[in-house]
Amino acid sequence: MMQFTKWNFVMLVLGCLIYVTDLIVDIWVSINFFYKGQHIFGILTMSFVLIAAVVVQCFSFMWYKEDFQKTGQKGLSYSLLIHCSQGGIFTRYWFALREGYRLAFRCSSSDDQSGASTLTQGPTDFSTPIREEPADLHQKMINEVADLSMLRLFEIYLEASPQLMIQLYVLMESGQTGFREVAAIVVSCCAISWSTVDYHIALRKSLPDKKLLSGACPRLTYLLYKLLTFVSWILSASLLTMLNVHSGLILLFILWLSGITWACKQQTTFCVSKCMEILYRVVVGFILIFTFFNVKGENTKFSMSAYYIMRVLVTLGILVVFWFCTPPDEHQVFFGVITIIIVGGLLLGILFLIVYYTSFHPNRSEEKEAFDELDGRTPPRACRIRHFLMQ
Image 1 (tube, rainbow, N blue to C red):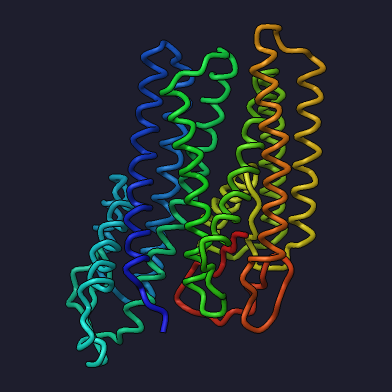
Image 2 (image 1 turned 180 degrees about the horizontal axis):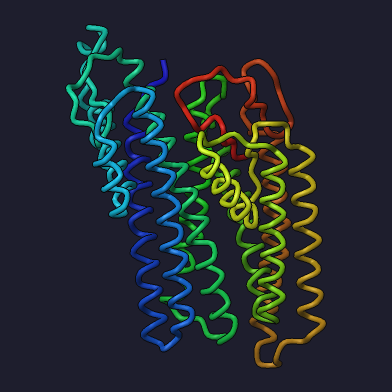
């Protein structure tokens, strides 16, 4: 039986702290831009924060609505009020921390032996708690954590990634590195990378036919693969934007449209509502600008290979164009270091990708694949995360 353990609770607390820290850093960065008189950058940063918050609240509320309709629970109006007040994620965290602590620390062996326990239906339901089997309680908790991990993934890529590009653009434009600016960039990179790894772990734990990503070495390898490829690309895109803002924006827009087109071609069925499915594909297209993931649950060995081949070609093209235009003499060393980081990060990231998928990637219970796994044949269950496979 899959258990929600004390370690899972610690990771949940860590994820909550990272979420709050990243939110504080976003507000601080925006205020810092306004304080320096860079109002455009401040407005852009706050705009991405607000857009990400609205999108995440929409998905959170729709998931509550779907769950309420399936179980016949009450409290939908109260849930709508909470989400309109931008409190949906914090409410989910409060519920997850409360029930997670009870399951991980306070459930005695006698409760397990009795064969049943009580659990409230959700943070917005005021109905009488019902009796449920311990296995169901743990599985519900795991699914709730998986939902939180997915929402955090949406938020971090919609908000932190463009905000990070703005920060890097300003840093490269000025050529001056301050402690506060570097600290904000490091926090954003760590938050993005951690959210990605946390989602990958939550995904496998919530699906019964997936082997867990266990051990420090596989997790560290996956983290380095995502972190290095992301840092390399975000620096490359910022470099092109600094060289020519319009060229950088056009490239990102083309990549966004390509991602949306690919998601539409995959005919994703993540949301019940057609409008929410369209929004989901728009979000998928945005995330695909920065990293690759499997949205349909199909074997993506070819798609992943094509994605990173294009990433290498575009990155090399940006570096060639940049150095052909010759940066100012006083910044030669600065941009030389950035170029080394871009090339080294991309090569090492792809190396860790290959190592992970050839040596550490957990194979499915019944069938082994070299890269991503098939999700379409998983048995139906009350876990929406099975419709969204990130690799």
